[in-house]
Length: 110
Image (cartoon, rainbow, N blue to C red; front, top):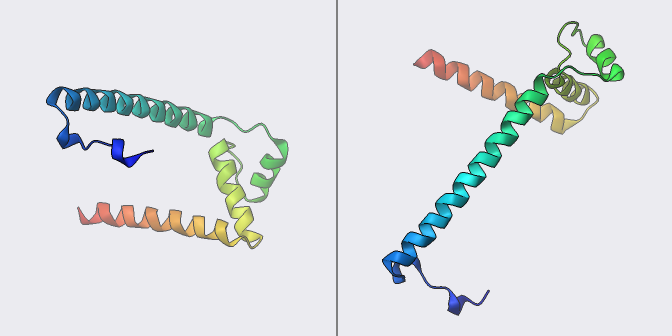
């Protein structure tokens, strides 16, 4: 893009500023709606029952006998990866536990 053609917002007329702000607001609202839709879909998917028999047997091996949700399958998969020496998986677990601990300590201090 040719920087000489760029015009700072404070050098534009009030009507141009209003029009640009309006477009930005509409785009922001659209993006927020899209993110909310994706989040709601993911939350619904995570609670769905797992159909994969192999993953169910791995979950049984780890001691999970009643909740075969996709969320639990992912958690078990990360634990399994950590047990196999995957350092990234181990770090994910540590970060999640640290966040949970920090949140529970924050609640105690309130």
